[in-house]
Amino acid sequence: MIKIHKSDIVPNRLATAGLEEKVKDMLDFVCDSRPYTNTARGSDIKGFKNSIYGDTTVKEQLKSDQHNKCCYCESKFTTNSPGDVEHFRPKGRYKIPGVPGYKKPGYYWLVYDWNNLFFSCEVCNREYKKENFPLNDNCDRAIPHLKNHLIKSEKPILICPTEKPENHLEFKEDTLIAKDLRGEMSIKYYGLKRKGLLDDRLSSFNRLKGIGPLKGDLNKVTQEIVNFINENLNENYTVDSLREIFKLNNDLINESIIDAGEFSLMARTSFSI
Image (spheres, rainbow, N blue to C red):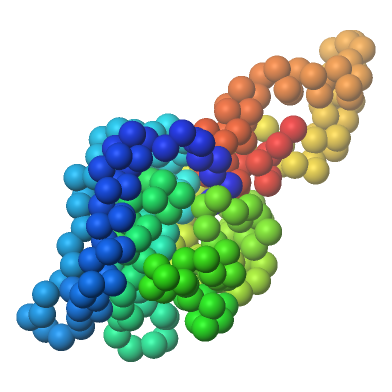
């Protein structure tokens, strides 16, 4: 994960039709909350309009803001999957890990809220994150919408993509490590240690390692090369001059450590020059 910087301009589809649906849902909930809260099998269940929050313009803006990467695992997967518009705060219902069943209602008034939407791969969203949304203290939960003024008091345990995940996660080479409970729970419920993802990160790490030294090893590596050149080729390079050569020739590393790079948190942790 890396911190996502979302566009300030809300996609028009959300600002128009999405706003209308939000107001309608809030009014409907006050008049009759049963479709939003029913848990009995066969009862009426509130539906939400994917045609609005999943509109092409919304999805494309999210993809652009996220450099075509999943907001959770940082993989670039769009050649094989269209991906999902993910609701960080679940829309219809939510689940507290370790507690049986689901709780309703969900964050129905945030279904079309730009700040609650992200672009995710289907594996992170559908197989792991799902509707899990634990808080540090469930008494702080800002549900229903009449308690929305408390939303800033909520302390989600799962890391939000607009936070700095490195406060809770770190890499040792290609291995992801949790710094605290939030990191541990995010690894589990975003599937950040699933087999396929581990393989992809290792492959990316090995490719980068093949063209450049690990962070912290640069001075050692360059000094060794300088000594070899000066002793065997009668050249007169210095560590500083060779470091500049590394910088000029490590285009792949430089491309990997910026926000647009796949698995960039791992790359910049190990290979920043």
